[in-house]
Image (cartoon, rainbow, N blue to C red; front, side, top):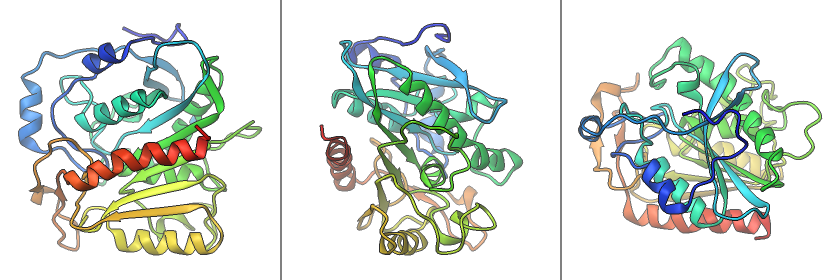
Length: 316
């Protein structure tokens, strides 16, 4: 069912959560655990309602999922960017990480637009080195700004109160998107994202956010968008050290950047009910074996911290 000709998908909270119900998995520069995915396959396949519009890459029709609380008053909104495992399990349902956060944002009164950059391009996972992964890093900032422009045209969205939130690869895309020299930002943009949040972002390092990978001069990354980054201190998939150094330098240059790190937490610490496991099949070149899993304390803090951060930025 496509909603490309309708401006909004209007659903109550309970109905929304039923639509996006799913089995356990993980996001972004990450990959799904085998056991939860096997469980997900036993569920009946579904085709989620979606809203389609062009990416600013000039060639991709974006598949997005739009949810909003009841009522017609203009509200702030959140754009969600998935990780490299994609947005949907093989049965077509949201991975639980995104289901949980969509639910949280809805409960806080936000319009929520979840962008499926992978399915829109016919990609599966883009965690492994491939041409598809290069395309995702290059073009997803253009997806983010297409989503912003779409929401700004909707009467029930406050155009100057839209946040960008991403996980792992999607978190790294957040950094590329909000850079003052973003390759995705269109000319003549009336108002930009009002805030941004990145969970354990990939490519969060000086060498990936500057030349030759971007147009940013060394030690020159700046943003006018307030940014909150959340990271597990024991994350060995997207490592804290290079990211902390990059963000500290950006903050010293006057950027409104905040970093919250969690002791003992690993990648995907905010996923609900995800057992901590090693993924040796995704061993890094330097021998690091990725570890994923829920950290209840870190997850609880994030579920409180992120809404509070957005509310403060939006004056809500």
